[in-house]
Length: 180
Image 1 (cartoon, rainbow, N blue to C red):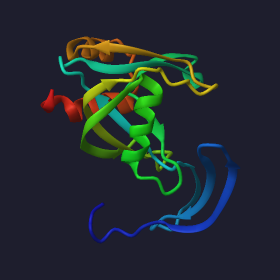
Image 2: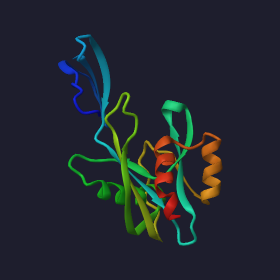
Image 3: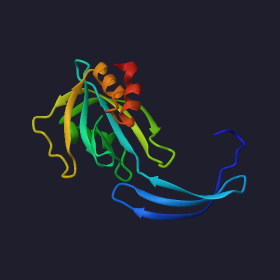
Image 4: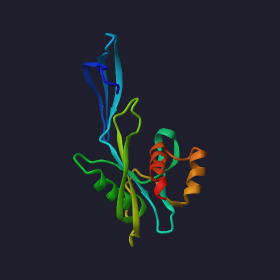
């Protein structure tokens, strides 16, 4: 944000919907030019994502059903942070639950806002290496429909061009690209 610019003044904040994973609020603001309006915002606790890389350089992704788009998307394993949970703890749990692998080496790739036009969700991205296949596959949550797949970086790039990959996975892939 440029120095010297005033921030809008919050006039009223209303919780419109309190959900299981996020809240939706409507805010009345006064802009520095004195114009007033309402802005909607999804309040989200944040998420953590892993770019799992096998010893032979393949990437582990999941194909997951997403109701909002009425279809399945390719994604890196990810999960929503629990209250006061470290993002690394979140993704260490999620990678095992979603893929059946445990990573013994972790590297933080960065963090980014997912969709700041309407949400405050931050994604914490990590690279997961030195993978161990778990002997017993963890049970998926009842509300999940997940298939684990292996891709070369080139195959993933093709899937990205075809529109089969979600935005958080695309951004994280490019954060990890120099390490692959």
